[in-house]
Amino acid sequence: MISFNPQQPTLANTVSPFENQVSRPVGEANPEAQQSTIRPVEEANKSEKSLRRSQNDENSDNADAERDSEEQEKGDNPQGQKGADGEPLSREEMQLIQKLAARDREVKDHEQAHAAVGGELAGAPSYEYQKGPDGKNYAVGGEVPITIQEVAGDPKATLENARKVQRAALAPAEPSDQDRRVAARAAQLEQQALREISQLAEAQRQAREEEAEIRAEKAAQEREANDLRKEKQNLEEQRVSQAELNRKSVELTQTLVGIQNAGSNPNIGQLINRVS
Image (tube, rainbow, N blue to C red; front, side, top):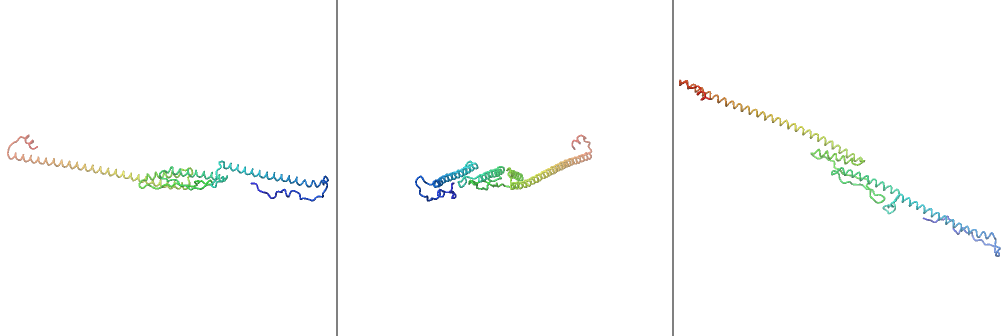
């Protein structure tokens, strides 16, 4: 932009003031007067040309400065991006946008890593945004909700969930302090689940041992009962046999007494067959 400079001389104050001269015949004019009246006009012309050159130089310098500034802005902003106000973005604004864009990628990669590994235990990522000089929103923070709880009555499922939460919390390349706290909480739940699994396994082992003892005791009782039944059966058989022997002995005695009383002499073979 060219502006008026009040310190520059003008044509009015460059020309010497008019002086009355003594009238002389033509051709007898005072040479010094002629010189004094011509010199100021020449000086004025020279001064005007100098002024114009100075103004032209100033205009040229300003134009060069503007051109350099535009070229610098184009170098900083080669695509001519504009801000929310419609003006081209400055170098500082472009640098800020680059930082915000890098942060946006970092935050979204971070949260998406949580969500991908967390699976059904993780919710959808939510982000905190900052508006850049270009009017766009850039994610500068975020979080992914994730469930950390034990499954009642199923320590193995609890263990699986705890380990998945740990993997999800530590999935990003650079876990945050909060991520590490979540992983530590999940590790505690993992240890609790392992203790419950160990206790459950011990309880099952004891139950199996008790069941085996019960089966062994029952089998022993059954064997003892069988032995008692066999013994009773043997005794009963012996009793019957003894009763039969007693009966036959009585018959034999009675037969012998009858023979003795009758005075007869029976056949011994027939007598034995009869008694038996």
